[in-house]
Length: 238
Ligand SMILES: C[S@@+](CC[C@H](N)C(=O)[O-])C[C@H]1O[C@@H](n2cnc3c(N)ncnc32)[C@H](O)[C@@H]1O
Image 1 (cartoon, rainbow, N blue to C red):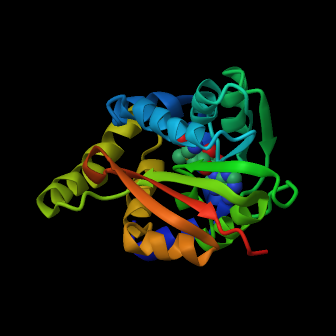
Image 2: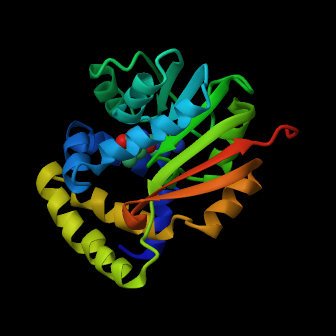
C-alpha cells in the first residue's frame, strides 16, 4: 500500500469503520497473539496511571472491544466509565464483556457536554481518526480543566537496529500472521502504514500541546513498540 493510499484511508472514517467491523469477532485474539500478551500489561499500566488521578468520570474513546474500559473499571472501582466508539460490531463485543456504559459516537463529534469528564483515554484509536488535531480538540472540550488525557498507541523503537528488525515484523510477518487469524490481511497492512505516519516523540508533544494540553509525558512500552502519552487539559482555555 502506498503512502498516498494510506493517507486517503486515514481520511476515510468509512474505511476505518468497515475494517474494524470486519475483524471485530477476532480482534481480541489477534491483539493478544500479536502482542504476545503484552497488551494486557499495557492496558493495566494505562488504567493504573488514570487511577492515580482519582477521576469520578472517565471516557474511554475508541473503546472498541472494551478491554481498556474493563481495566479502568477494575482500577477505578468508584468511577463511572463510559466507552465510546463509532463501530457498532466492536461495541457489541464490548457489550458481551459487560462494559456497563457504551455509546456509539464519532470521536470528532462527541455527544457529551463540555467539561463533563475528569479523565479521557484513547488506546490505539487516535491514529485511526480522520483528523488528529480535531479529535484532540474534541477531547479537550469534553475534559474538565486540569482533566487527564491518556493516549496509548503504537510507535517505533528509537534504537535504529531494533527499529529495522521491528519494521520487518510490522510490514511482513504481522500482516501474514494476522491474515491467518482474522482472514483480513488488508487491515493489518493498513496497521503498519498507519503506525509509520503517526506522530511520535517531539512531534506527538507538539500535536498534543497545540490542542490545549500541558504537562506532556511519554512512557515508552516494550522498547518503544508502543507508548503512553499523558497530559492535562490547560486550565484557562475554552
Ligand atoms: C485498534 S481499535 C482499539 C480498541 C481499543 N481501544 C483497544 O485498546 O483495543 C481502534 C478503535 O477505534 C475506533 N475508531 C476509529 N476512529 C474512530 C472515530 N472517529 N470515532 C470513534 N471511534 C473510532 C474503531 O472503531 C476501533 O474500534
